[in-house]
Image 1: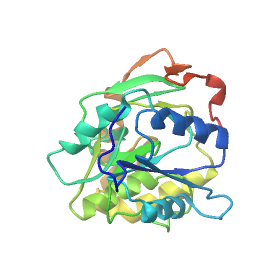
Image 2: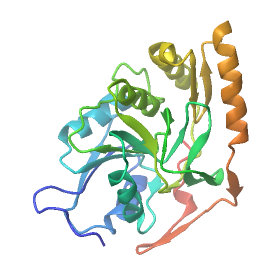
Image 3: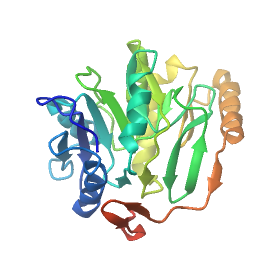
Length: 267
């Protein structure tokens, strides 16, 4: 168990968009058991009930966060025992100006970086920590007091992690991946809104990277002639950097027992 950093300021503020309480409660328990009582500020956001998009909901939590670190976590992740002891030193020792960190991302050249266990398997892409241009949304970590916010013009619930990574870079901050895996109970959901979000992201930031944005869900490209070579190189780099995939992990044993695969969020 990690001792509280100060008596007045929690170590973590955890912001989560919640629409399934049973998932959120198990996620919360998996992290809470690693800290002393009161050392995590919990900020659940019911975005659906309040008609908020992802950016609006997460920004509401960030605006109220008081922790030394802010974690924006999906409701369907599980934090293995000792997770913060693994994550914290990598965050605190990063030599650059940290803007946002994630657990899985893609470099400018299209190489995957990170470590995660999900329904697709156990995936590890070294080295970490590493600078990346795009991030997966399942866990994002920001320094407390950050001025970064998610762009509320985003038309849905996708691509907000890569957007904030670009926003960090635009003001001279680093977006990175650290080696601190969690279990993500969902393999992802590409719905019709994904196309709107990806086009919005490319329209906003494509001009800063030659019309090509490599992401965890593939390469977004303007498909203009001058971007086709960059796109091809990024796709080849993605194929070359595929992780070793081990058998899927269906359960996690922690202090509070077994977290069953039946909690998987495939919605």
